[in-house]
Length: 335
Ligand code: TRP
Image (tube, rainbow, N blue to C red; front, side, top):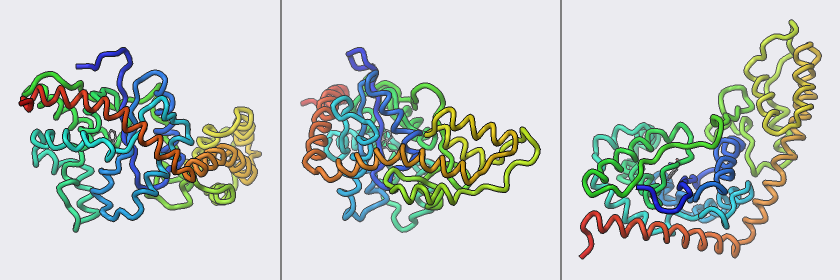
C-alpha cells in the first residue's frame, strides 16, 4: 500500500563511519540531491547501524556531524528532504523488534555482508550484526518507502527487505510496499581510483581516493602521483586502464573543450600526461574546494546542526508515527 499524497517516497541511509569521497559524491549524493524536488525524501545517518561494528562511541558525534555537514555541503537541503539521525527516531527500534520475529536465523546467517563482517571481526559477532538487514528494513518501512537509492552492494539487503515485507503483509495485512533499489536517470557512475585498480573507495590505498575534505595541495599531490606511461605509440590506439581512468575523472570535473583537447592529443600521440594531470588537478581543486569549505563552516556551527537534526527527526517521526499506528492495528497490538 502506497501512502496517500502524490509524491513517491524515497528513503536511504548514510553510513556515519569514514570520510566522504568523490565516489560517494557521484555515486550517491548527487543522486539524492536530484531526487529532492520530485519525491518525498528521507535521508538518515545510520548511527545505530554503526554500533554493530564500531562499539567504541567516542568519535560518534564528530562522525555524525561531519557526514551531515558534508551531505549538506553537496546540496542536500534539510528544508526539502527530511535529514535525520536514526537514533533520533525511536520508532525505528520498535519496528525493528517486531520485524525480528519475521526474520529467520538461517537467512540472516547467509547474508553476504554478515559473512564478510564475521571474517573481519571474528571476536565481535553480535546479534545486531546478524540482524543488520532487519534494522535496515525498519528504516525503509517506517516511511513506507518504495524507492531506495543504494549501490549494488545493498541489493541483497533489499531483497531481504522485500521478503520481510511479503511475510508481514501476508500475515497481518497489506501495510507495506515492496522496496526496490532506485537511481536517478542513467546507470550509476563509477568513479575510478587513481591507481588504475578499480573504483574509488575507502578501503583502497589512500592516494587512490580523493576525499571531499582533502586540501588543495593534497588533491594536487594525489593526482600528480597517478600512474601514467611514456605515451601512446600508434595513433588512435586504445587507452590503457589507468589512462582511461584519468579521462573518466576529467569527464566528471573538467570543461568539454579541455577533454576534447586531451582526447585529440592522445589520438595523435602528442599528449603530455604531466600537463594533463596538472589540468585535471586544477579542475578537481575547483570542484572540491567549495564543497570542503562549505562543509567546514557547517561543521563549526553546532547550533545549526542541532537545529537541522531536530527538524529532520520531527519530519521523520511524523511519518514513522503514522506507520506504527497502522502496524499496531494490523498486528492486533491495540488494546
Ligand atoms: N546499509 C547501508 C550501507 O551500508 C546503510 C543503510 C542503513 C541504508 N539503513 C538504510 C541504506 C536504509 C538504505 C536504506 O550503505
